[in-house]
Amino acid sequence: MSGVWVFDKKGVARLITNPTRESFEQRDQPTQPGTATAPGARPRVLVYLPSNQVIRSYTELEQRLTELGWTRYPNSDTPNLIQFHRSDTSSHLISLPNNFANFKHFHLYDIVVKNRSFFQVRDPSAQYQQLP
Image (cartoon, rainbow, N blue to C red; front, side, top):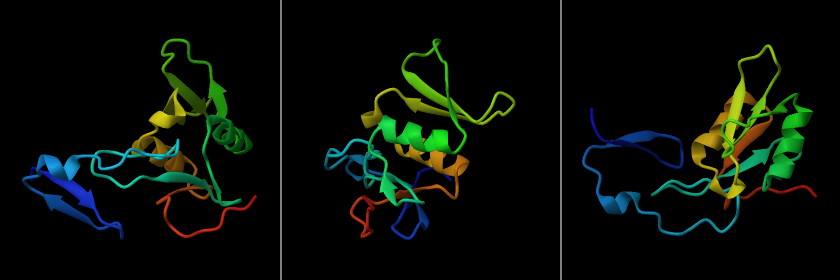
């Protein structure tokens, strides 16, 4: 099975066996930092569920991760990455680009998978209330 798997709005995957270039071209550039887009994909935002807050900066993300027990990992070997780890004895590690505007969908989902009940990836045009 060669081709590209595409997910619709309901999360159902379908296989495109002969994708065209147009199906992967990015129509609009993201207007908000922290929106993860891939060519042909809809933008996404990371939401902190307890407060229903859209995470728009590293300051906000680091604050929330710190509350959940994550600490920033001192990483001088790769200055283009920011890393967070759960503890010294844990193998859990979150690696993110040092520029928040360069987040991709897999960075958002990495945070969600390692903090399932605290974060969610959403469509920015979805209707939900953001608490102050």
